[in-house]
Length: 313
View 1 (cartoon, rainbow, N blue to C red):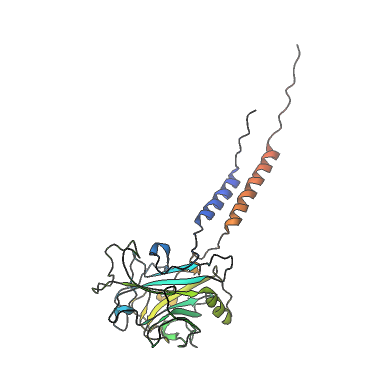
View 2: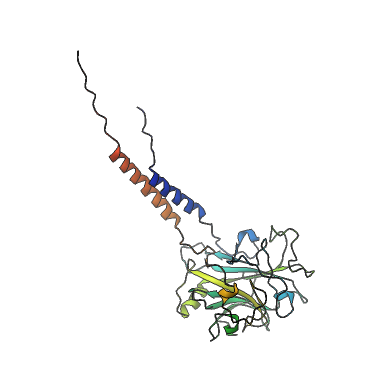
């Protein structure tokens, strides 16, 4: 007997295609943050005007504090390690920033901060970063100051960190830009044209500490929450006074972060664009539901075979 041909109706075809596309678009997440991983394993932090940071616009003259990048080579990246658990509030949040040089003596000797707007109100709620400008090198979390914190001229930081971590190989990296760490770099190892090879500053923060500090500020947050970043170098841990990523100069501007174009595109801490995340298990469930409904409708709408009367002569 000929087997019935299973044909999907157009509406179900559309549903199944959409589910399949959504499932395929879900990126794999790292279990841990590897600060030595090539840039292909990192997520570039994007800006609406696709504006990487201009070279040689640092305010203190030191190329080590000059964030550099161009259309082909992003100036900043992020990576999230989910710890391999179902929890949305553990794991590690990491960053990689390209800087213009390693000046004498060797090693990163200034400060860099990633400001977080965690509730989309235009105000920076927390700072993550590295402060090597003092007597002790520190990876840490800092509170914003008492100002409005909505523009360079209204933003400050509390110098003493909320949480601090001694730099180790697992949470801190200062690496020469090479084709090993950035396979796409080619010969573009000196973006500011200063005659010295660029460096990557990498650091990682326990995500549970970020969540806890935001909670202390009244903000509920997890790895799927939407945020935006402001990234800058500084000469010390109380202001962003050296180089703002995404604009030339402007460290004393009264324009808001958004008006300056230094506020990143919305994304999640997990590195995804700010769209609802689709659970892979949900995709499978929707697919099975679509198949089941298709079968039921097919049985209901398939006309029954009519008996053919036999005419006797």
